[in-house]
Image (cartoon, rainbow, N blue to C red; front, side, top):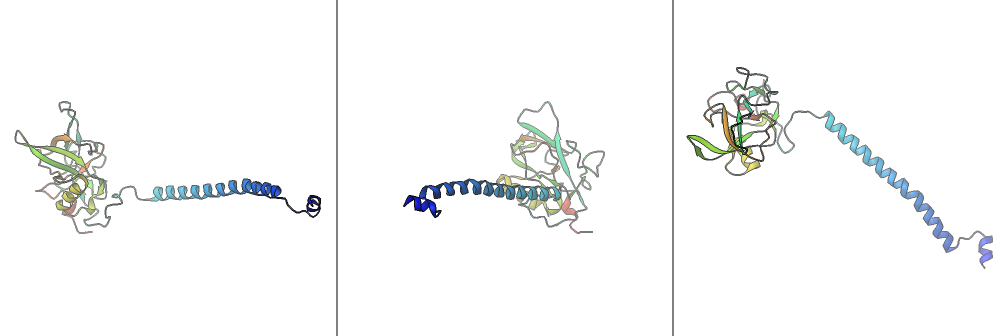
Length: 216
């Protein structure tokens, strides 16, 4: 019976097992190469989309519809160096660094009268949580929101709401006069980004992005 199976070319169970193993050894690498190719194409497409996207817009969680005139300017502050400050304190002010966003300066620094940085820029809002006073000056903490294009902040109330949403109750947008004018020293929060300029508002001058709501 076994010789007759060989004569007519019938496969034995052992032969079938060998064929199955050989097919698996052939097909599995082909499947793996196909999956790898699709993954590579997906990664390349993602990198291409990022490279072609706009460089200076607000984060995806924030609406990008223009509320203010995108061609307007807003007031910004940066971190000012002060060796006399304790390690947990920071001074943010008009004359702080960096200054790379300032394209409409006043006296070579920030411009509270007409805004200094383009409202198209995505910068953090400087948020202040006042916890008391120290020698007549407010005491509290400073922190940053996620970057947001200035043209989508419609009012100081909206900026305050953004501070509360991201940082918690009691946080609001820092105002130009909070520290007596031009700068504010407070406790440095872990959420403060010292490497960026921040949107700050001024309550008695048209130096805010929302002072120019109408598009040109």
